[in-house]
Image: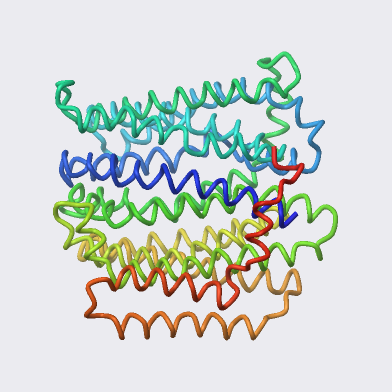
Length: 479
């Protein structure tokens, strides 16, 4: 099982390293530089608003599907046609609720129009994610890897043409940017359906509301977890735009610091998409069998994240200045958000394990507490400190959630703390600090940090040679 994990992980990371950074920093960041912080900040707030409410498009069906297919693949093949039809009905409820709630919050007609377009995009994204949940559950990881980058690849092509080919005579705006995204998401969904339908029972589309509601009843705990997690991770941008005197601009500053975190979050989700079906399958067979997978995946993710976060924080202004026209204000925001990524990685590992094990009550309660903490601190900090206050709140919230999940897993699965591993983490952190101090005046300090830090990951066995060798071994489950 570990061989499958690492084999598919290398493909997913390779494809995402090629595509997603270019889409985020070459296209998305360029759009922000062209339209300005305020206009992009409004888009960022509306996007977060549409993402928070997209639980209504899913109701936990995706996570439920991954777990069901991983444990009962043949039976799950019959689900698709019934559920995909039901999702169309959910889309109608989603759009209606989103627009009514937006009117209540105080959005004007132009903002409602943009929100409507973003709502359509969310439907396309979530339906594609539903197709991908089948790929993950069936262990069709090559298909899943392709779908994970196809929309961004198309965005690079179409968005790049608009941004960098002046002969087309198109001037980028947030509205045009959203329409281009819609085209990319639509094509991706068509391709996903084409790849998936060959493996499912016919008919592919059929109404069965009683079956759909029975699935929803079973998946509601997953839906509640998703919406609670979205609230404490996405509400910052919405609150910034709504309660700060210069909200759209501050939201734009927050978006500048958030973009690299978003890129790292996408890579972290690669681990989640691979770990969740594997945890689900192994937990069904034996809870003891998860320890090796948990340890190896955790060491790789946490060791790498410590290196990335340390390099990002100590070179914050340099990195942001490469991307944005006016980066100074976003540096403190960026640094707090990067610190929060360490806690997010812990959540990726232990939160995924708890979800696969069905400990949704604990996850929902801890997420609800996280929302309360996040909203209260943001309410007091945002009016005075703007984007910096929101970033600090994100760090506090993520840290609290990760600590809760970590100790709950330690107790639930009777995991013994490996003190030699703790020592290796301490050595890694101290070594990174010393390297930064010794070479702080060197023009190539960033490169030195990356190379020496990577070597430390190998020397301290966070990245193990045996696991890398297994990446090259063909496995029958890698389809």
